[in-house]
Length: 190
Image 1 (cartoon, one colour):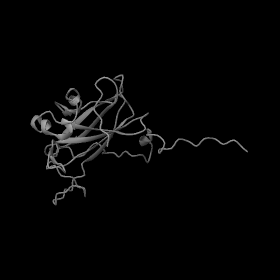
Image 2 (cartoon, helix red, strand yellow):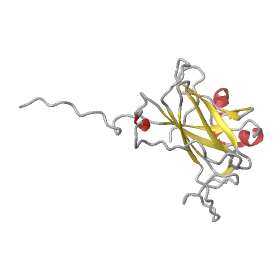
Image 3 (cartoon, one colour):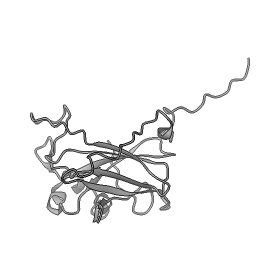
Image 4 (cartoon, one colour):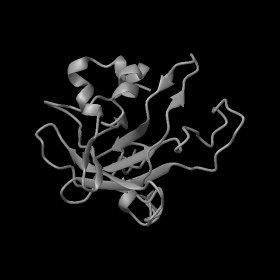
C-alpha cells in the first residue's frame, strides 16, 4: 500500500489567517459601519494584544450592534418596528495590533425578561492559534447608570468589569482587547 500524505490544512481546521487571502472574508469598507459625517458617528478603536501584551498583527475584529433606538434588523427582535440597520463591521488588525470602526452609539435594548441592557457593542475576535472565536462587549463610560443596571455587566466580577468599558478620547472611544494574561478582557461563552 502506498504511503499517503496528510491533507493540507483547510479553513475548517483552523482560524487562519485565511481571511487575508483573495476571496477571503474582508471587504474594503468593512470598518465603516456608518459613513464619515453621519450624525453621531465616532471611531471605536483599540489594540489587540496577546498574554504578554504584544500586538496581534494578523487578528480580525468584528462588531455588531443595535441602532440608536436599540433595534436590530433581525427576526428575533420582538418589537414590531423594524430597522434597516445592519450594524455589522469587520476590521483586520495592523502590524501594531490596531483596529478601528466608524459607528454610532446603540440605544438600550430590552431583554426577554423585561430588563434593559445598557448601550453596548458586541465584539468577536479571531486570531492565529485560536481554534474558536472569543466574544466580548464594549460598554460606554458615559452610561454609568445604565451600566450599573445592565444584567450582563452586573454578572461580571466587579474587579473585571473595567475590561468591558471603553475610554473616551479625541477620536471617539478606545477599547483595547487582551486575549490572555493579566488584565485579560472578559469573554463570554455563547
